[in-house]
Amino acid sequence: MGDSPILLGIISAILGGGGATLITAIASWRKGVREQDVTEDQTALQGYKDLAAEYKSDLAALKTEMRETQTANAERFGRIEAELSVERSTRWAAVQYARDLVALIARRLPGVTIPAPPESLADHIIIPTKETPS
Image (cartoon, rainbow, N blue to C red; front, side, top):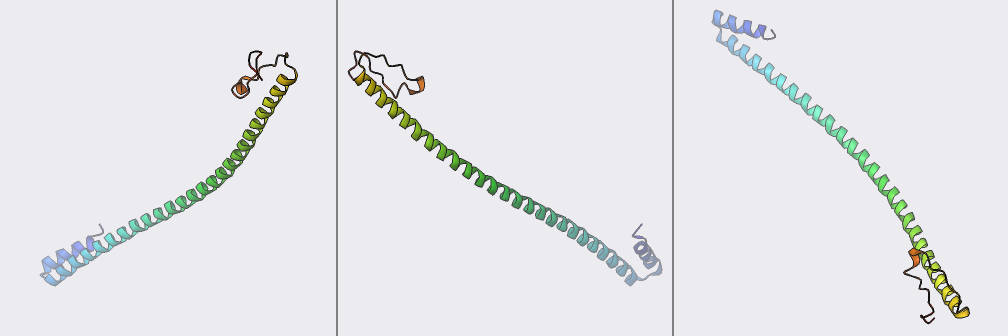
């Protein structure tokens, strides 16, 4: 019953014949409604601003975390690529060494059977047979 003074003002204006009092009562009621609407709008706007600030903060934290993860991954990938490069170099040095040893054995010990290389190296190291000239 927050409108009681307004309602009383309207009734007394009608009964008392005071048109000015009626207009004042209606204007006062409208002003109260506008002020309440403005207050509600401001409250809602502040809520949206607070929510936007929270999202902005969360987004900044996610960006920071993403940059840290990217940096860590870049370092990790760099280490892996360096290790892979060393492993490739070592493998090809071992293959070349095995080829040189097979050629040496075939030249120095022509009748000896040379064991077959492991399956992973079979395409890279050819063992000469008696029919294959060294």
